[in-house]
Amino acid sequence: FPVTIGKATGLGNVYIGYHAGRASTTGQFNIFEGYQAGLVNTTGENNIIQGGFAGVSNTTGSFNIFQGRDAGRSNTTGSQNIFQGTSAGYSNTTGTLNVFQGNNAGYANTTGESNVFQGVNAGIANTIGSNNMFQGTNAGFSNTTGFNNLFSGGSSGRSNITGASNVSIVTGK
Image 1 (cartoon, one colour):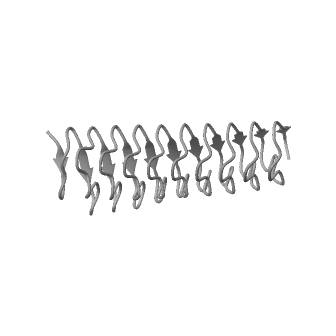
Image 2: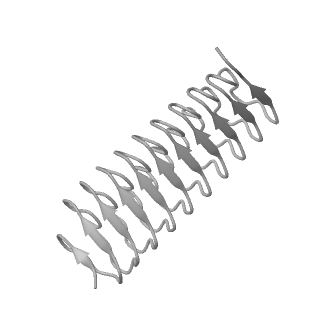
């Protein structure tokens, strides 16, 4: 049985919060918790969306985990993403298979795929770059379209914008 505070349809859903899951039609097995979490989700399935405005634009995206205020806010059809932290994956629309952990991690990502950004502001400017791994505060900070990069350590690869197949490891201070 669904646990609902407000309007909801579908099977096996839990919606808690003002307008959480409001537009849901046939989406099933979702957990939306927070102010307008998953607001326009219609048929997306198997999502966990927690936080005010988290996943607010998600319509059909499935198998996502968005945790934190504004996490995955612009996601519409992107699936199999994990965005954790305030504004993590904020601009993602259709990007898939991404993991963004940390406040503002992957903030500008729209369609980039198969990225792992861990740390505050990691990959913050990435828009369509794919197959990147940025670990550390401000790692890959300016990357927009670069792909196949590995930047590890605070501010590693910070000035890379479009470069591909780079490795930068920063240790210590």
